[in-house]
Length: 241
Image (cartoon, rainbow, N blue to C red):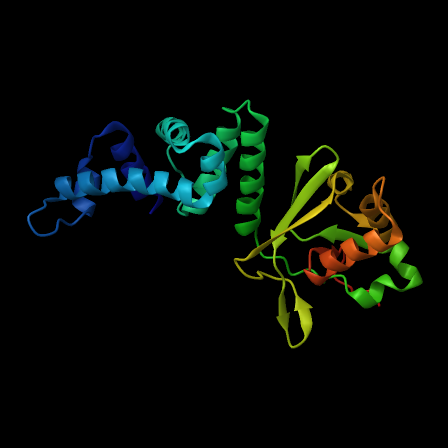
């Protein structure tokens, strides 16, 4: 499969069809293998551009569809896909797209959609979620915590950010975080959350949630929302009660 993919990428990029590729492709109707490859070659290109519009719609709107298409086509030509899933390829393209932008609004749109796409394709996370009951215990301040693997925190405005992660599902009344769903959740949070270490304590989390203007009520509301959505997990496999 890897060899076939490499042959096809070369065919698409240089418009040459190797004998190995022709032998592996069956024609259809009046199309011989060479013509069949040519049809797929053209549609494959358009499918990649269409996937960029589908997965980065706000970026396309911010940049303007004509400019977005032009830049994406240039990037696709220079960096053909090495991925089997379009989501992974568009994630790679979005990083290269950012390098082409200087406008702050356009860059912000791409960063947010890139974070959403990264959360979407994130691996399973079998970690134990933090529960609301744990927050009320004296031990909470020192409990080691971490973000769900899908979490991405993106700066949205001076001092403010948006946290993007996969939604947790409810299973028999309990919050379950594994490969939740393909649904994403975005929550506005203090930018200080982006500076937390890979493993942080409950006390460090509270300080970051407070930021400069965070009242106890605001902190409690922010924390409750993140816990409800399953974004925060225990850094070990043991669940503290």
